[in-house]
Length: 297
Image (cartoon, rainbow, N blue to C red; front, side):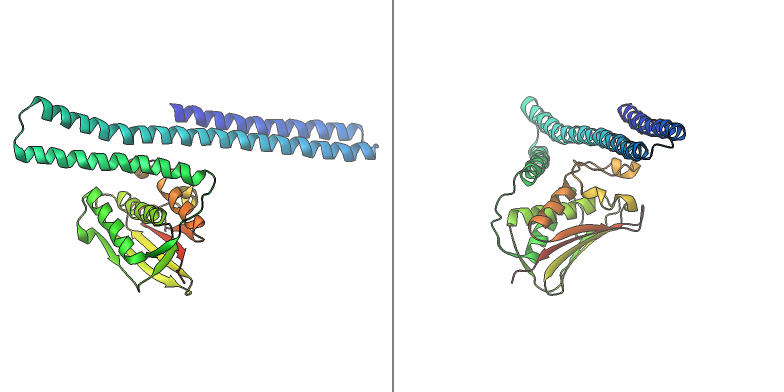
């Protein structure tokens, strides 16, 4: 209902802007026919009309953008609320069970394992939100250290495997030559983890992800994360890196997330003098995400 209401608002402002432009043109054309002899007035009239039309167009664009931005913010708040509430409710349920019932040791250990996983999920969501706030605030000085890319990818890969309970053969790392980059280990680790996690989440039930590293032109270390999942429409290849943006497709909408992961990836790449982008042949044809960072000299 809320989405439908906002779409009606967008359509209303677009129709209003178009209507005002048409009325202005009609009034001006009539005025020209009545006052065609006054050349100076005609010139200033044209100038005034251009200003009015430009103002109406800009006003309409800003209104539509603001409505869409509010819609993304609301979607983000709903997603974060769900990501925070679900693990907390799960942990509370298991704690109440342990408190009120006699549970054998095997089940007790299983409850502990589930609660630890929910705690990790909760912590991951909080870290995403906090990191986004830090990246969006005034830039701080990077504490650059030498990072061996291969071992870091393996560390992030193991973390994602454990979080999603996927077998080792579903997410394969094919390392190239030993590569090192200069950067903030915490930020680079967050970017790599988000790329792998994103590929696993959007792969659907049959996870098949390939990760590769390589050097490009002797200047950049490149990390490629390829999946065979739901794919990305051409129009969304750049939008998915925006903060809070989530693809509106029905398959993508069912995937849990906050819409911050890829924004963090691109922000980290820019802060380190690199770049990040996505490639896809379209829905249902998988995706490839590339992260490039300058090599350590």
